[in-house]
Length: 228
Image 1 (cartoon, rainbow, N blue to C red):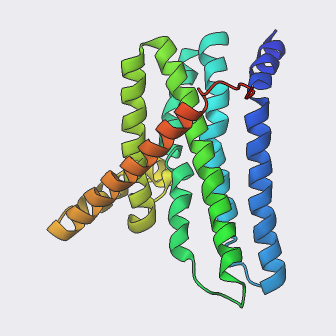
Image 2 (image 1 turned 180 degrees about the vertical axis):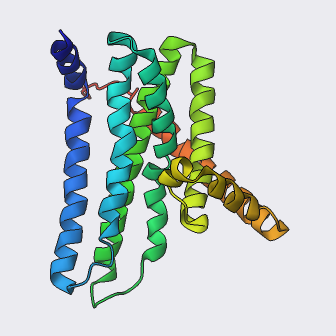
């Protein structure tokens, strides 16, 4: 019975999952090609960042089964918390564009394509998983609460991007050393300049991600009709 439920659910998400796998393999292939051509592993950590972006996607695929089919709500809520903590890893990859510069005689256009491919895959993993979670919350509560959750996730995700990029903390630190996370974030609000930079990045990235998310939501609602 459980196997049948899982099979039916994942069949419904088969196409997007396969496409995201292909996109991920393409990004990894570009990185491996770059290592082969240059002999350097400058962007090898992109693969790890991509793996972290897959974590919330995989959780979002399994969470509805846990909540509605298996009815193990405690585990479902625990998975939701883990998803929320890991979600910023998906859009975080777009900040890797900061590393773009000429290295090892590799054409700049090649590195740009490499970084964009990782960033695109990360964004799509994040947006797709957020859509799944928003749908789950909408079914459990209502549309307003679901959209409120999504907006809060995007804004806190933007804060997570700032923390990861400039405070140099990651998701593991929230669990392993929460006090360090608190004090390091508080330290960034000690001066007016740091407060302005933090809030500015959170707001601008939040707006960017929200526009992107709304665009994807609208696109998937466009009817698939053949032009006459």
